[in-house]
Amino acid sequence: MPYSATHKARSRERILKSATELFSRQGFEKVSIGQIMKLARMTHGAFYAHFASKEALYQASVRQTLENSRAARLVKGPLSAKHLTDLVANCWNLQELERKHKPGPESVLFNEIGNENTEIRTLFEASYRRVKKMLETRLIALSRLKKLPLEPDREAIADKSRVILASLVGAVAIAKSLPEEAERQRVLNAAQRHILRMLGVEESELESLLDASGLEGNPA
Image 1 (cartoon, rainbow, N blue to C red):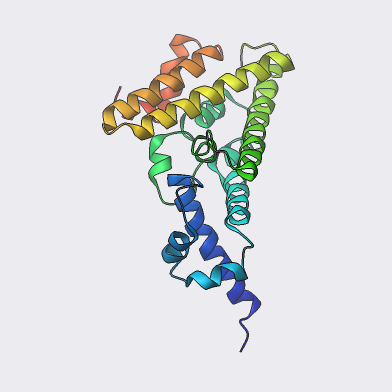
Image 2 (spheres, one colour):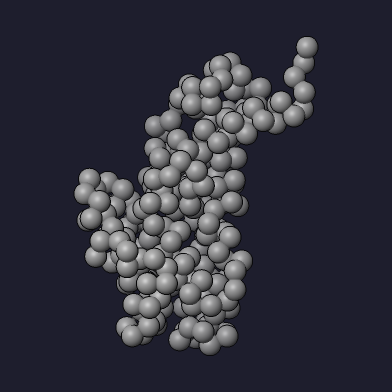
């Protein structure tokens, strides 16, 4: 008896959920189809009934991660400096990466740095450009509303978005590789503070913004 459409959809979602967890932790190259299916508690042979290849599954995982990430939700929130701070501080918080669900877009980026697979490199570039565009849109809108001391110049803001991404992805990559929790949090805090200062946040306002985003509870 053939499986129902509902059963097939649920099976596909189980595979996708398991793959996203493994890809976000280990990256494309270090994860096998066998590992994914074992985590999904399904047979290896069932994989190809839902995905043509591991690359196809990875593409679906990346798309879902970016669409459902905390960053994507925050960027739709009210235009305020606090929400921008949340976008910078909370989405790239190490604790967010260590949970088994809803990885942020940074996991898509730093896990695949230097990957030689052509398809994965293409996805990496697309992910980078999407997140960069999200930041640019936010910065331009806040600068036009005079909520950030920035000129709404597209080229200048594009450069700031590049620096933000480089700082965040680098900080998370380093922090994830360190064994000591306190030092991991210091790396993340330092990157977040640097970004906020670069955006023109005054020192007197910096502490209150960080406190509102919950960063002061981390080791400093």
